[in-house]
Length: 419
Image: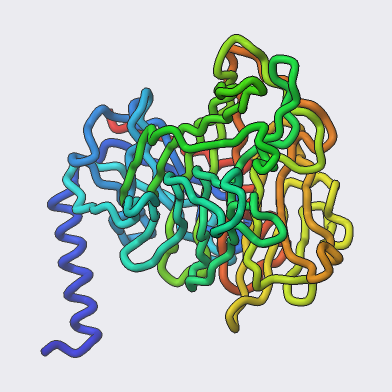
């Protein structure tokens, strides 16, 4: 048996020979410059692959060049026109801002490490035995004896922390219409009526899962896209779909030695027919998060990009919002981030204050229509984008700001192809 130092040298030599012999035909150099203050936040990066090569993923390998080291990096190709090449740049506090990669011809031994698995009416995104979130496409009914108008599909629960704590709650006794992470609208003007899709016990409307549009697994992310229908219950009987919602949820999983993972939400709204839809001003609507019942006013906190806390965050506008607290002898939370192209950005927040319902339960919501209407016209698509940084431990404002900056201003990739 070799002593450990000799073994390390031997493995390095084998790796170098393997790389040079197997992946010697370079296609392009990819240089990425990150902000100087990433605060250890890993950064998803993408580039238009069709501008570089038309080779398939089975014939490509991505290598990071660090001095004399050449290390194979997991990557994933998103199909479409154009195709996009995705990978993750792993950073540490104080690490270099410039990162150099090479795309070379040669087969990479990649596998789908993060996977969406359907079972019993739910879709769970996981990496091996570690679960990240669960999406319900089946209809969930309220407890026995409660009006079935509270039934709902098309929501996320649980959202797990990296250590496995449950950060969401559904059907709390005080708000049976709350479903983990979900996206209804409260006051909606449609064909002369005002419809409430949020308070489903009003029996004016609901939001329901219609179908899966796509599911993608890979070595960098797992993503599903679903069609949700915003359904109006007609006064004379029957129902009608007023608005379609294409929602995609992408998970960039936990990386080695990291205490967080990333969830990206993209919500595309459009009118279902020739009638316009006006989302009316109201204090809550849109992507909501009913948090774990284990948080209250004594063990949880809020901090926004503008320095607001739980005492004064409600109604304020923000680029990001940290919601975190003690849970199961640990600490966990989420940095909620809004994308700059979102309607009414920076978006108003609906944050339950500390005195909410005595106990101080937590609810957090980016609400673009909190202080103004939003008219949706037929034939147009309207997009909202959000990122959740889901973590264990405590996150300070500097890390939240860095995470939002990398989300709002994705680093550019300088490509130099080999002719």
